Length: 162
Length: 276
Image (cartoon, rainbow over all chains, first blue to last red; front, side, top):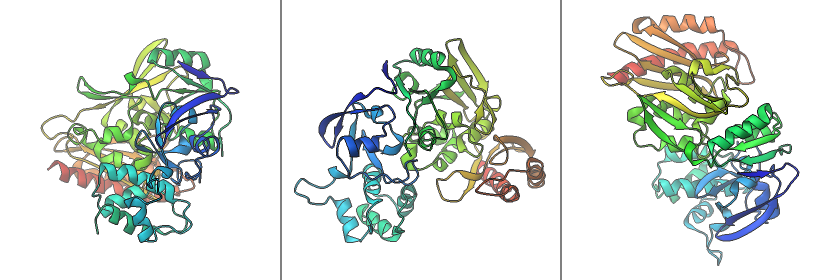
């Protein structure tokens, strides 16, 4: 049994985008803040902090998860993937990112990292998702620029539906 | 916002979990998927001295068939149940209701038992469990007890769980053979897809003369009634008036009654068509 007192800091070790990293966190530290402040991975954005907007979505053991609804201590030993993992080391965009670029599927870009991570998970399960399925999964994200039409177009391209 | 400080405890077994609950009592909150609890902690609507994280207890991450029921352990996520290949055959109503629960991203973490523990009056899984006549398995250091769904959920966000009890599992009765319980329908109205329902209805065809209808969002807990098929539409309208509904940010009581008067007969018709 693991027990961390409210005033204590626990050492949290995890694999972030293929690298083993560790840092300290209070029990109440959210994973999104741990990624950004303790590990310096600022690609993950923090919007509403109650699971509604989807901006902070990351993959934990391959599964799209709200990092604002996950405690840092819960990620102990897990494999976490963030938007920083998508492009090749030389900066070449992956097909999902390229589709977003080609379709101008981002304006301010705040919601983009979460959407990319959600669909990294979803399209790995359902590579040829229909537009209805894409829209259903996209409903878990809010784009305050309201650029949904071009986001759907990019996702349809990524699912090779057009 | 960020949550206030709390102790974090991660038991490895159910025995350890109930021992911790006995120690902290009312001051502890059980953390499984965290999709309802963590937003409330972040918004500081809820305070806890300790969070007891049961998400890694492997004995709770189990689905199994026990004496005509499907038992779903407390660590089983909504998407895990939704991905179960036999779901549509064994629990067709759950298969119809689950896609309405939150979003793909929250179902990845949110648990079936967690929805039922949270006991939101318009939530899909408590309604489904109540309509099917399911059970909730509660464990504590004092032992185990099994409550019928209708005895478990008392009112809005209020259940019969004692502070030292852990919801170890819930049990959904299997669909019986011969087409009984095969005809099902689930309908809801929400402001946006994935939001909490304003009103949700679920229907099961019991036999060729009778349907069972459940409604969420009209009272503090899901309400269930049986109707003769032919009388359903009129009976639903009268029931909507009797329940009255309630007013909140999303809808007036009159709007809830209207929604129910319209959705109820639709669900009954759809369930009958589905049974045919």
